[in-house]
Image (cartoon, rainbow, N blue to C red):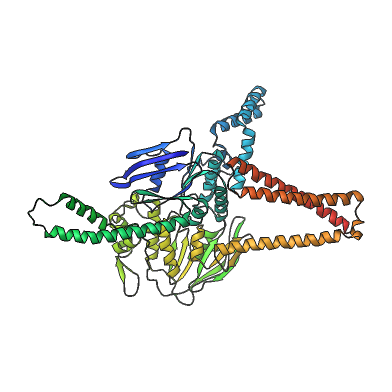
Length: 622
């Protein structure tokens, strides 16, 4: 069943045509990712689908009674509400009844209490309250009474996501759902969405997320929509085939155009009887021959200043705010060509560490030393700070008219913009007319063109499109200096960094590897801990089963010990069976939640049984 169907949709932004003929459908169970370069109309298309905007022509049909849940990039939450109130407000009618019910309890109005209790039963409000609390817990949010106004950007995104998921709409439309979320929550969301039967339509530049969640990719290119029935890896393969086919068509068109051009030139200038079909064919061939084809990734480098032996040194730096300790006694000496990724949850102190490195924030204790040749380039989360009326090319020329990319080659400001996917038609646009991703890309250019030899990048990947991400990755890999990055883009971190600063409960760990290697290390360590625990338990159990030890137990306790061991084995088997069901990906959302809760109950029972088992074993040893 098609929930939404777009047919020949055309849309203009001012005089710019975003879509010339966009047609596709969103069917029940689809998990679709929409990909396109910044400024190609992704957000506009979401606005059309959600009804916030209308097309110039064409139709958008939505199946009757279809409910749509939309997660915006910057969710609009009520700042004076608590987390609980905001998530609960997903069901406004129920919230009103609940508030009246608790008011009646305070005034002890028995008549109102009875009437409102009946209404609470009709709405199934008691279970809904439990579901709200469970969703808040799943999202790893602060205390449910915390006000929205004091939350970080990532926490607000999680509140909006919890509010959306609890509504259980027919279609989830997600605009950059992983932006500002820490890696732990991204992985939870990735697993949740991939295992569910939810219908998804999302815009995201997180390539691991794309590959693991989505089964269909729709690409916007040159005003058209191209559909690929596969994940991100499949899309890359098929897009390359399309590019090669397009290039072959352009090459063939150029050859045919040469023939046609020769024929046109041979005709007498005054002749008015040229074959019209030949003239029309020439015009079409000319247009195709001038087509550069689909956007290609480009490579760019900017000359950086020489870096001396002493670069940047942290000596036992510490920082805390009030009673909250971010890190203490952290030391590190930067080496040439360091590629460091900083990993950790939101609010752990990653950005604070970067600001201490750049001198914007003073450490509470410790010292930061800088080498004489050090030239820092700091890309901040809050982006470019220039007047909205300023033109794109003026932002570049205000820094320099020419950009050195090697000792022998330099580029003009226009050429530099071209290489960073700003075509000539955009050079004189005002900043106000740029998309969020285009602003980030321009800001990144202003940081790199100042010739730093030490780059500190705080969330550089948010809002960047895939071609720009590839350009940036290639640049950083070849960069002749040091790089320190904070990013929640796991693909980006894996591709660029060589070791990581990981914020853990015990402090900052200097780990010799990227995100995936650290994740594998943690999983391996947990597995080894489980094996050691089981070995220790097995050894204790062997001792407990000796006749000498059994005598310390009464006959009834020996029977109980045998039954507890049997119960634990049966519970472990049941847990494994349910986990296999959970991983099939065929479960409805309600069944998925029910099964997860059941597994949790089994784990709690196992824990209780194991505690009793240990008590009996301990008694048997005495």
